[in-house]
Image (cartoon, rainbow, N blue to C red; front, side):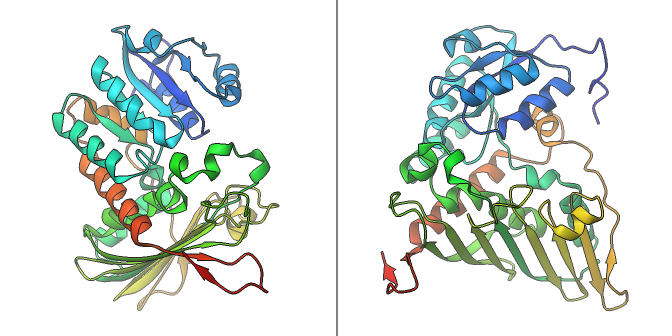
Length: 357
């Protein structure tokens, strides 16, 4: 870990800022930057200011009236953004113009045209782009990957990821339900899972089959609430990815996520933040492993050497780092492909016939 985190008198000369503040994921970026010793130059949000006001009050940050106030000063080195998803590319292009590195909330783009422009921006090499794919930096997943790399589960054959999410539609902004602005369930949620597949296995996505279902909120015709993807990796691993917006309202967190990995020597299960057993044990996440030689056991979790923002700064500074531009592009490509060819299934009630679109 960096020696500057949380220490008095360790403030860096460089500063950071936030342009576009529409999703609370940006608080991860803000907190880690502050802990690393960076001061914040301010937040700019041109649209709904509710979240920006909340975060400004929580972290004692300044709200500014234009993005130029944050892009022009030389001492502002890194920008963070959780803007509406289809506006993030424009912010990235502005950051390139001013030579500012950018950490984006996911997803970075919502269509192929945006992807092509994003790839061109990255290939120009003028700035570094990061994305808040935080799952890699969970202790449970870091520990699991170490076990996979060490061969403790043998050859990996199958990976299943389930991520039910709590929706609470009355708390969501209108853009969340608009595919042109949000990207939709596969692009918004499964980008984490496609990234994890590549990271856990070292294999690339070979083929994808997908389906999206719509059972609720007919007033939002292009908002789908379930997604199921079957994918095969180029090394032979098969994977099943599932996400929905149907976690119970009484769930105490975002949802009940599970990850299952099956190998020739054993299997593993990760229970994420919404698991009742983890909550009863006072844990945020559990890693359970069983092999041919050992019965089911809970594995002690290991902390990753860095967190996501520090890893991004290491990349900016030319130091060894985990997450790369190719990782960002590969995960984004996979979501766009899955979304593009997914079968759309509409079922609003049990009495209706399935309508495919």
